[in-house]
Every structure is written in structure tokens, then in C-alpha cells.
Amino acid sequence: MPSEIKILSADVLTPVLTGLVERFESTTKIQTRLVLATTGAVSDRIQSGEDADVTIMQRPAIRKLAEHGVVVSGSIADIGRSSVAVGVAAGRARPVFVSVDDFKRVVLGARLIGSADPRKGGGSAVYFAKLVERLGLADEVKPKMRYPKTGHSAADLIAEGDVDFGIAQPMEILAKAGAELVGALPPELQDRELFVFSAGILRTSARPEAAKALIQFLSARAAAAAIRAKGMDPD
Image (cartoon, rainbow, N blue to C red; front, side, top):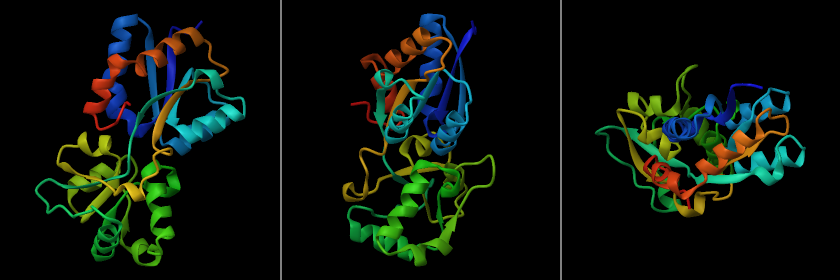
């Protein structure tokens, strides 16, 4: 039997999971291995047969895996809710995103906008690309988009200050030195269901009981304060 449980998780959760997984190991003496990628890449890797015990990703994606019998449906538990947010380099003027009209005005007036590359499956980047399409702004916005080089993130782009502002999730921005969180996009432009992150046990897990213990730990009240401090809503 493996001596550790493997967690295949959306990389946007890195700031949230790192400390919590360390606490879990200290409390339970169960060793873990945290493997990170975009939600899209995690889903693809699991469907391609990569072994893991626990996966953590956006709720709609994990439910799809459960429908295909890859994740045990009864094991799924919500960890917390995120949002699509705006960040700027430290000290940079903060754009106002209170209303949909504000959003359109700021986006159309921007010189450069940063985000992860939506072709690689990052949740906020994919959502932002679809959002500007839905609002009829895609033709104007696409030439302004800048994506990070390999091994870097949208938060890196924000901190470097070469873009007017960047689109990412709050926990990414808060964790990056040199980046400041402006706030979330207006409620009318959010998708509350899409940005709930959930954990579930893979049907092929070699250590389902240890995997269950981890999910219970992450979804328990004791973890809520740490999750909230990193920019997510655990409720």
C-alpha cells in the first residue's frame, strides 16, 4: 500500500492548500503529495488515467468526473467559494469595478490586461474570455490581452506592472508580493456555482480512508479561518 496519498488539485488553490495540508499531516501523520495544474489539465489527466487519491477542482468539473464514474460521487465535499477578481501592481491606481458599466468602461479604456492563458484551462481566464465575448467586447479586448510565460502566473503579470490590471482569483493575487487585490468583479458578472471548489475521492484510490480523512479535514469548520484568510469564502 502507498505510504502517502496523492492530491491532484487545481493550482489556483496553492496558497490555500499548502498550509492546510501541512496541518493535516501533522495532525494525522498521513503523508501527502500535492500535484498542481489548471482545473482543465487536472480533469484531462484524471480522465487519461493518471493515478491519484483525491482531486480538488471547480465543482462543475468534479461533478462531471463523478458522472463518468471516475470520482466517487458520495465523497464530494465543498472546500470554499472563490470569485473572478482584479489586481494591480502595488501602488498602481485602482480601477473602479462597482457596476457592469464600470467594467465595460475600464476594460475598453485599458492599454493592456493580464490573465492566465485561457487555452491552458485556468478557471478565471476561461471565464473572463467568455465574459467579454458575451458582452460583445471580445474584438476590442483580445488585442489587449497578455498572458504569462511558461512557469509564471497571472499574479506575476500583475506584480510586474506591465499590464494596467490583471484578472485572477483573490487567493492568487493576495499571495503574490507586489500585487494588490482591487476586488471582485460586480456580482452580476460572477458565476457563483462555477467558482465553488470541491474535493472528491478517485474511484481508483489505493487509500480511500486516508483520502476521506483529508476531505473531512479540508471541509471542516476548523479549516474555515485559514481558507477565508487566503481569499476564499468557506461558507
